[in-house]
Length: 193
Image 1: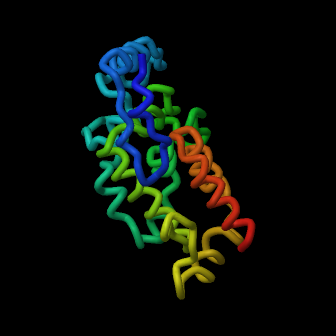
Image 2: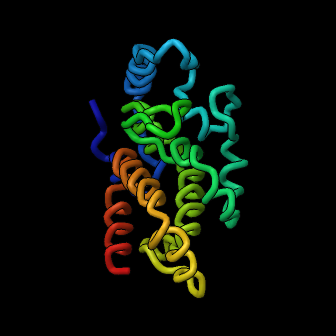
């Protein structure tokens, strides 16, 4: 039986503050253990998308989370590399562009909403990509980055349409990890621009 007093609506600013019962945690582990991956996919104790965000080393992802999150401002890397986005922003769909990435499971999505370490890294991941596109989260709203927006917008959104797929992935990710309100704010911001 859930304690109604401890439930909090997930926002990007309170991720990791939800509480789970011991039984819910056991159910999540059980659900993951029943998940069937193809033969070439690793069988790990920690689900793959959660493992990446927790900083666990693996042979199935070529990057470390700290390495990726330190790429803020490295626009050549962010524009030229096409497989990191599927790892940073997993959703419930497999990627047609990165066969080594994993679709986000329901238990992983819940972990993304409740784990404080993942929450902190998610905020850095959003900051990384929003900066790449020329905007930011400021006072719980989406806002232009002064002096940089037009150039970033022209280089990443207006003409190279492959970034539209990336934005779509980020929006799907925001929705499945409980940040629908932030996804709507991003859509409204882009629509106005």
